[in-house]
Image (tube, rainbow, N blue to C red; front, side, top):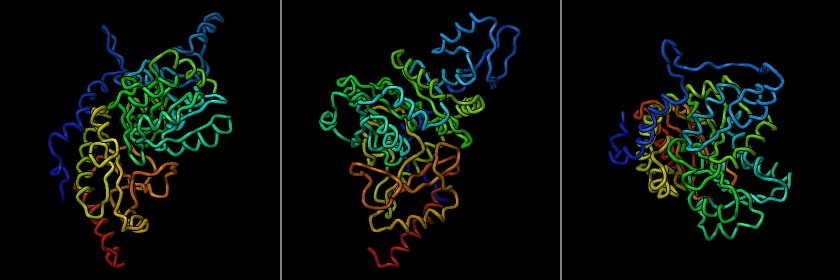
Length: 419
């Protein structure tokens, strides 16, 4: 069995996993009750379920309603104790002051668009954003009178400044992009947004705990907690974090008005998943790096899109701004291969599930060729491409699985007489 970790330089391995190692203790301890005196407490807080909240008087009920920007209990659809506990943990991880937990990662992406934009506004969206975010912008924001411009994720500050308009109110980035993996220059986007008087929103799902958007000029951070935070492929949930009251109040009001809160069971599962996220991702990030380096040596591979490798667009920004790497990356194959070649290879894999999500304990593969809508020129190249999520399986098994598939691709191409 091939050991991909034999290819990993120790200094690069340390650079990739240190962020996960550093946060492990915090993840275990934050958001938990502590015993006091003779009072014992459960290690895991309870998931309280409820809709109606009872008050001792109408005056007390009225006071609670005015406190909707805090963790007060008002009505079940406005938040539960376990939700507020999870929100406090996410705000701390992200480096913000307030977080709103919502029913999905997509809800987390769309909530700030609804909260901060109105008819007549202009929004700049990175061309690498999550596909459903793009659909929302094209089908809902435009219908409500918001103009949307997509910008190349690796555009320079000068190029982007030319796209800014007097009515630009929001810049939305996803770094790295979850299909094409460009790491964006968030401090530069922060400067751009500041000059325009706009908010900068960053989808930080890949970089949870590894990148602090607020320290680099962002106003809002988006998380699909479904991924690494929940970590077990059994929960759909998201969160939006801010670092100021000016950004928090319209976000919280919009969440309440749109009914965008998560259920207590999903919050409890996510809080439990966070306890092991550091340990899971230290292992998964290390294995993913080994697999990525092994793939980089294969003749079938044109380019590996792993932010920790120089072959990935924006690698220099990852090196500058991130404390580690995650276990999701892309692979672009040589132009001599067809999408059918890649499809046959994927269908034959034994240790990679075929699925649309990522962030759980299991390895996954998903074609990205033909599944990405782009307005700007793609950086991935001419060959077919796919996305790999590396789980907790043995790295040697994953590499051997991929080797069989790639050998088959090469044999198929040779049979066609293609160089």
